[in-house]
Length: 234
Image 1: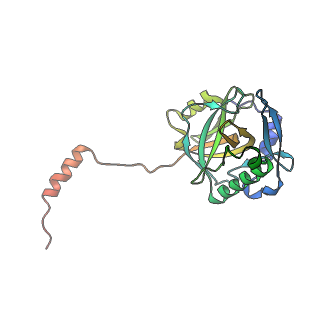
Image 2: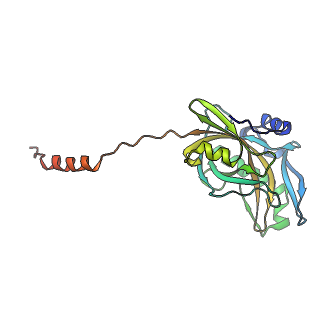
Image 3: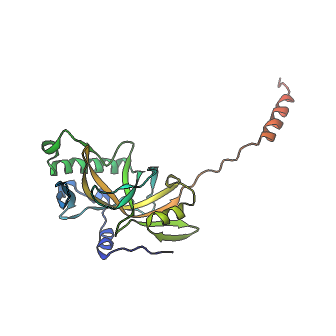
């Protein structure tokens, strides 16, 4: 097992994670996170003046289905070196509705319609209950903490190599996950706005699938012969 590097600040953030049902969107605000080289200000959502950290699976039996995963690592935040893997997870209808409410509130906080109304705002929830979240894997001082349940043990690590080793040829869509996330910033791209959802820590467990037991070609041929011997029933 390799334990990841986690700062005290990020440990506190994970400990303070709220469930979506606890969050009152009226208490959401925003503040400047950083200024990019091109002059654009990057804003971050806040809740009662603090960073917005959410536990998407607050109950013991809560799991998210991984519905899709990008093939390649992409830039996490414009102008920053960190690389992430974007995956789509499915949340409950109630949580999807709350995420839509967060997007609406943050659009008001950012004065979106008056500022750059011609540029699309992409909601965190993008249909069918699916939400795009980012696993930070490379070129970061605080990569996502990755945990995999394997043979009754918990493997913990970080980075692309650790993830690849734990997958062992499988895809993340073969797993269910628990996730604590940070609404890190309002991603200000040339063609869209979006709240960047960063996974602080995730637990993955293999999806249980029904084992399909079929018939071989030899058994198919035997069934054809047997069918020819069937008699009429009167």
